[in-house]
Length: 243
Picture 1: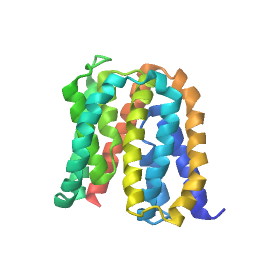
Picture 2: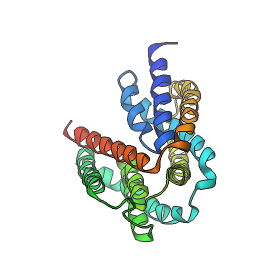
Picture 3: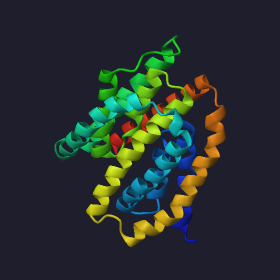
């Protein structure tokens, strides 16, 4: 097993565990690690395939906790957001988008941390639609669609398994559409598929290892971990904006 393959296996095992326990953040960890050894174009295509596998495993384990009604506003916003994101990508520098996203997410985490109320809001079409729209825009423009909907789930006060089930279904549908588009564009080369063949079992194994954690984690501790992941995502956005 050569070094790049070993990195793919380790990176997506850890990524699968993080996403399996918290619902988001796996790709944020795995992609930068893999990009140190593999060309970024290959890593991005590989990430979409393995994210689909990761989200599929999460959705399968927590599907019965999925809040189907909560998906409607998310998709209502995500579909036009994805289309607009393609146009924004052509007009607005990606660094500017990432910087703005990082600042907004960091402000949200600070507000959540200072709040004395454990459940800070309720689900709504407006807020869910805005979260889905932001996820669609950022997913199409900079491949960073997790934090906006993660922030919405945190705001709505979802329990860990509702969070995992609902966002697992949301992400698997979004990832499927992305994979279809990338396959049609010829991005899935033999090199990408070779890495994917090694990464898939590692991703599933990492997700399965996180299942006992997701079942037993205290909701308040879960929210604390989630705030930490969103804060880390915000800092990554700001850091990448300055590169």
